[in-house]
Image (cartoon, rainbow, N blue to C red; front, side, top):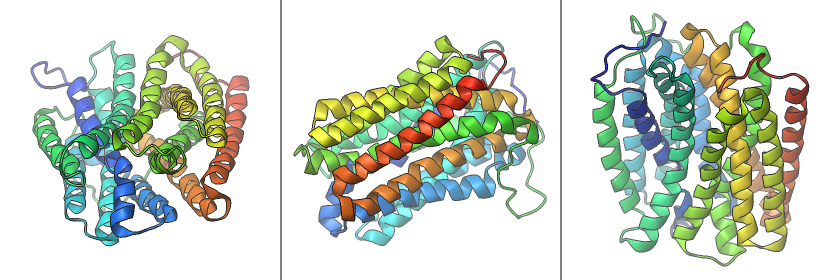
Length: 400
């Protein structure tokens, strides 16, 4: 069972959100650097998506195998483990001289993200002061998406304008992780009677039966939104360089960051719309964004790509926060970490499987054709779930 702490002198929800953001930033740090790795190691575009998918598979494995572990052991031990895995991932990239260490670094990064997703989200929500639950919900989702967006922006700027482009971003992140470890040490524990699991066998994720009616449409909408994020974090830098002939790594990082800026904007707007309106509205914006992305692929236009990233990201943010709020409100406290981990599990399936499909399709259809096929499939999913929640809203009353 989880409780909110009454200690005011110790760091609270904002500090937990900062730790969350730092952890998630490391997962997208390599995004603008894939072109440099391709040149250095000589692998194909398909291998780029495989490297990216290795991260997503790491997330999925942890969410499935240990998604609810923080409900038992406590939030802080899981956060410490996630920070340690993030540091190990950064060291792999610092030492990377070939594909094996690159893959290992992405796998460890995925393990870290899987632990952060459930435990950090629950910690941010549970450390909120009474009456500020809505703000805490925004803080949790904004920390997730904001951290993911800051990663490529930071590494793109450092790689373009500072020395040692394949080392300095990870050194900076190691320093940030050290700071996050100190903050985590001072965070109150929100799980009463934390203890080691009685069985060493992973318990995995669990969605209580009472939550499933809310969970299914919310998770499918998250799947569609995260598919868009996966396209940008895995493919957009290559498209910007090869098709638009823009080789500035800071520009590539900024383009990827834009979709996460849109996501944060969408999350901020969710409180104004309310959950019942935000989820179908998010699906609509997601469809419009995908249409713009498809237009940029066809016309080779950077401004249209940026507009698609901003619009699609806004839709993803609206749908993501609305779904997360609804699922969190419906989940009983003793199963909240596991239920949230299940939600992220479906979302990360969206960020991995479609992107690998795009990478495979590039060998036959080229980057443009594969991107257009991807956009059409995700549009179909978004339209379907948007129509469903219009007919059957997730909650009887709006939750901000």
